[in-house]
Length: 554
Ligand SMILES: Nc1nc2c(c(=O)[nH]1)N[C@H]1C(S)=C(S)[C@@H](COP(=O)(O)O)O[C@H]1N2
Ligand SMILES: [Mo]
Image 1 (cartoon, rainbow, N blue to C red):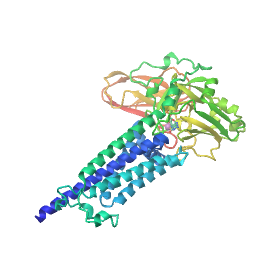
Image 2: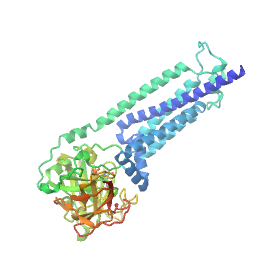
Image 3: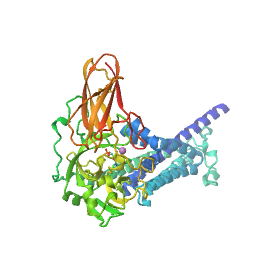
Image 4: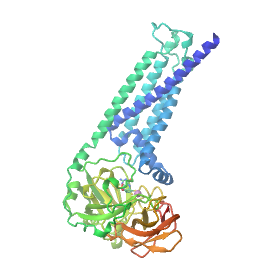
């Protein structure tokens, strides 16, 4: 009899803990849902998961970020958010269990998470108001309240009418320390036991209400971009005053497996720190140009830019995080306003002509800062504020309504997307986002070449195998590409026609493949006559170097 009693007690205790854990989960769910709803009133980026994720990105050491980009590619952000949700789930379970015994502490724990979320949200570079902390705080209060309430069901006296009231077997965890000293229920000889019906109803109602709040928040957040989507669909790009010459016929080789000469927008690599792609309404967009040496400040609207003289240029963009042989490089036809013209209108002079500013800092709506040498922007190259990409208004992922493009410089020092502000300053006075994180202040693109086909570990037939790929050395151009089979001599590859020296160049090499395992290696020589170094380096601090090679078995 005594044994039976003990087992049954234990079972009840376990069940309570399980229900506590469930309460914790529901509380977390409610907190996130309410936060989502509130974030729709503040701004989508202020939601706790996005904010904590963004803050984590800001604080991740460059080496880890590099690793994440390498391992997860463009999924890195998804993985990060899943990771945050995983950690939240774990803590929710623990806090729920804790709350069964220490009701207030459980709720206090939930509030603590709210504080973390709020701090993260208000510390983001794009945060301009403490209001950004609101979604986290309100969500946490809702979650804490719900947890308190749900756990209350687990310990509240069962209605007197319940037939089994007071059965010893139903004795539960309420005799543990309770953080409400002198709770009347206990003193008035409250029957231990839990209100099953009350709990189930409360939990179901909470789950339903949270789902409703969450879905409403989602849809409101989704519709925030509606004006932007509308504005984008109404953009018609005027014909450029200075059109790009057609891509020469021989620039695109007909080799299966080679990167297409123009990268379609949908295939263009995307690298940025934004967990939510900014949806900027072009009609409300403004760009301000100001700072050192600016004699005439300028504020431009999107329409202003559309009415200016537009240029169209083919430019290959590359990311500094690209490993040797990696995918973060793409070539597009951009339409925009020449940045040098705008700067001249503002009275800006490059340092070589006595201008006081050597750095141009571009700021985006999401708080990214990108520093570019003023000298490069004004040295005659086609640096532009781009409005169009391959005949379309910029896709949102690639910076709509306006981004910078500077031929020859890695994206992190030149290609600010969702730009809203340009400040002329000096490299001594200001470190931009990635420079603060140990990347180089100045980063011209290193000469690189890549074997697109055959793929690593391919098994081509013996005979003539087309080895082909792309090589790039923006603004210097590609003069020569060579291929080496195993430890053999370097052999000159056939170069496709050059479009411009700001674009990549395709190459091919008909290889007489003999059976067995082989290593194919490629190297390029740029327009200045300099050949790619063999020395392998990591992307940090100023771009990877080294030769790309591919192992195949014939
Ligand atoms: N606002 C903003 N602009 C940005 C970035 C960013 O994180 N935020 N990343 C830069 C980097 S590192 C690169 S390589 C290019 C990539 O441009 P894409 O995504 O259009 O290919 O954008 C640059 N511009
Ligand atoms: Mo980049």
